[in-house]
Amino acid sequence: DVKVTQSSRYLVKRTGEKVFLECVQDMDHENMFWYRQDPGLGLRLIYFSYDVKMKEKGDIPEGYSVSREKKERFSLILESASTNQTSMYLCASRSDRGRSVSNQPQHFGDGTRLSIL
Amino acid sequence: GNSVTQMEGPVTLSEEAFLTINCTYTATGYPSLFWYVQYPGEGLQLLLKATKADDKGSNKGFEATYRKETTSFHLEKGSVQVSDSAVYFCALSDLNTGNQFYFGTGTSLTVIP
Image (cartoon, rainbow over all chains, first blue to last red; front, side):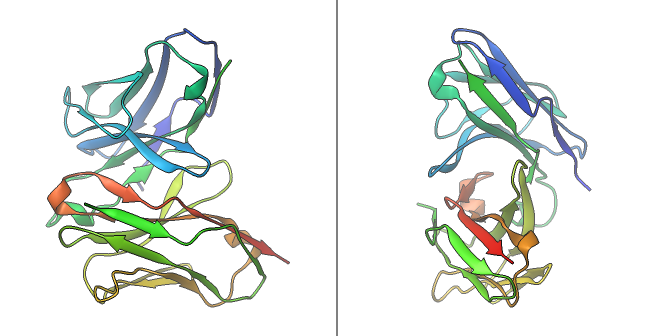
């Protein structure tokens, strides 16, 4: 089974801090994603990466950056945390091998519930 | 563009009741369709998928059929259990739009004994 591991289940930080959320996958997947999940808004894509050192903006990249130095690890960075970034953050990975990429599911970690005080 | 619309929740059912959660989609190409489940405090888990028209995905007693003519992928279960209480997300993936998934907003299900 695919394992996507997020470094923290719960995290509390203060406004203005630089915050790092880490995600590691063990299936050699090419693609990795960061979402935030808020009540009534569902999942919103922040950034994704389709290869090492490659990144693409999602729907809500403002206030965030990412890093992918190794294939298995994808980090989300809050440059200067603000209270409106309090949320559940979900990391996912996906293979792009096989006959059709669109058939491949995304595999999720357990999420990091981040509170910014 | 691509989008997924799910029925509004929350849904509350008694144990052994029949479940339907409606999902309709809009896609520019030929999408693959997915249902995910999220139990309290956890991430999303793949429940089932269907990759072409008329395919039926099934898992753990849940089923969904890919209906191209009605652009729908409704989730059904004949007899729900308390342990099915969770949030359910419908999603699509379209090769024309690369690696992105499009998720519905989720439907919360509570099953009472």
